[in-house]
Every structure is written in C-alpha cells, then in structure tokens.
Amino acid sequence: MNEFKSQVFQAAFDLLNQRKTLLESELKSLSQSIHEDTKSSAGDKYETGREMIRQEIGKVENQFKQNQSFLLEMHHLYDTCKPLQRVSEGSLLRWGEDWLLISSSIGQVTVEDRKVFLLSKNSPLGQALLGKEKMETVSFRGQSKPINVLV
Image (cartoon, rainbow, N blue to C red):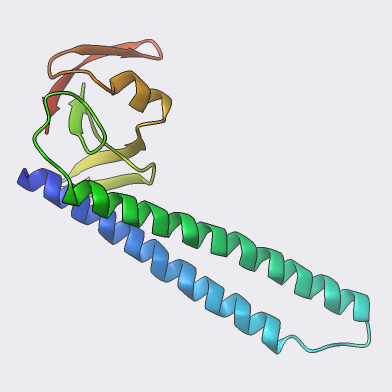
C-alpha cells in the first residue's frame, strides 16, 4: 500500500478513535447526571428532566454505534486494500485538486498538509466516481475534472 494512503487511513482511525473517546465521555456524563438527579417536590419536572436525559443518552448511543460501524468498515477496507485499476471502495484518488478516499462518510482529514475527504461509495459523488479509471474525466454538479491519481 502506498505510504500516503496508509497515512490517510491512520488519520481516519485517529479521528474515529477521538470521536469514540468523546462519545464515551459524554455517555458517562449523562449516565451520572441521571443517577445524581434527585426527585424534587415537583414530580412532573423531575420526570421531564430524566426523560430528556434518557433521550440524549439514546442519541449519543446511536452516534457511538455509527462511529463503531465506521471504524470496523475502515479497518476492513485497510486490511483488504489492493492495487486498483478502477475507482472502487477503498480507492484514494485525486479528482481535479481534491483528494478523496472512497470509504465511510466521516468527513475530512489532513495528511501532509493535504485535505482528504472521506466519502461513501453511496454518496452522489461516490456513485459518479465508481468504476472510473485514472485520467478519465468525471462530471459532477457542473464540474468536469479528471482523475489525476488513483491509489
């Protein structure tokens, strides 16, 4: 595997692990809040507050599960990477001036002062790029750019 591509994957792992740590901390804090909340004489107010905390815990748990899913998917892509002739899941490419990794839609990482966008193969741009070869021009939302690099 190309060194730059390995660094991009490592940056993605780092980002996802940071999110995991933040979400674990948030879950711990919310759990403590719900246990420390004492019942007041205004029972409805107490129940409403606890329910709001429970709903927030549910949201954070869903984010945590999604993050774990992204992490597993990224590890799978990293472990199964092979040289590619066409854009597919796991491809690192340069489309015009933009660096893209077809993986999970987890955002952007910076490696060697280059921004790399991690996008899903199911995203509109991912769909437009799938199956294309190096130096093939891809049109998307009024922009036509060649695939300069395909790793």
